[in-house]
Amino acid sequence: MIRKRLSHYLILIAAMIVFNFFLTRMIPGSPVARLAGDSVETMNVEERDRILEFYNLDKPLGEQFLIFLKNTFTLNWGKSYSKKLPIFELFKNALPWTLLLAICNIVLSTLIGTVLGTGSAFLRKNGKDKLLLFSILALNSIPAFWIGMMLFSFFGVQLKWFPLYGAYSMWSDYKGMAYISDVLRHLAMPLTTLVLASVTSFFTTARYGVLATIERDYIKMARMRGVSRKRINVFYVMRNAIIPVFTVMMSRMGFILGGSLVVERLFSYPGLGLLMSEAVTNKDYPLMQYSFLMTSVMVVITTFLADLLHRKLDPSVEVSYE
Image 1: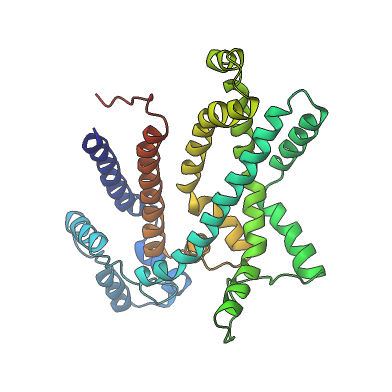
Image 2: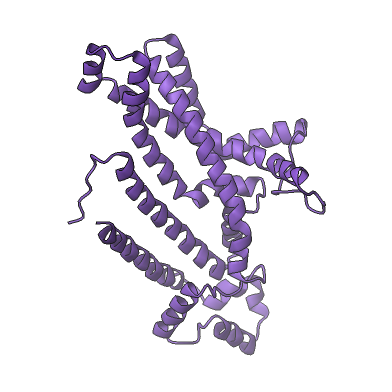
């Protein structure tokens, strides 16, 4: 069963690789103009041919595709036109910062959203539930960039509690705990922005998961048998209500780049989101091509992991691939 599922996801990744190759070649306009940008007008024929040769664009389409496949799997992704550095090196330097931001966001938003959501469900007949529900839904209506701008203006510019940009203080010689403290201070505002923007989905999922579970027959039977309320809430309600929360968490992990792009851009946080944003702004098509490919592969991998772990959490779920 696992092999069959894995084969489906591998086919999907192969389709994305093919689509990613042809997508950039279907964009209207000259490839030289896309790669060279504004400087294309000052180029002579020899310089244009050199660019086409460097990116293998002077070869037949089929040969280009084979070269693309070889370079993709050997991690020979070429150089970024705008940054003049190897693309794989750029990803290697940016990935740890995005993972730090994304993992902290997922952990905190899951914990906070789940705790608040379950608490709201258990207090459903209390006025506090309505106030909490209204506050969370109101927060959901505020775009992430607007939350970031408010934090940036208040805590960064006015109070000057946190740094305004970057992931660490440049030109500093911090080491050990001093370096960790500096990294956490730079992380504070981007992370808070993402948590506030993400917590709503976990809150609503946990709340409605609990509300749906407490009305089931086995919960009523447990109460009739005299099982304590605490045991019912923890081992009966929470155990089943947590499964949809896990599904949301794994789906969020698949969209690390999309979720952090705006925030990384706002705070100049040197992760994959900022790298992709700069590639689009500078029309750096080689960098864009592998940015889109990496994003797609990350989504597929996390979806596959969620598929496997979901059955571990809930053995009653049987997924058919026939």
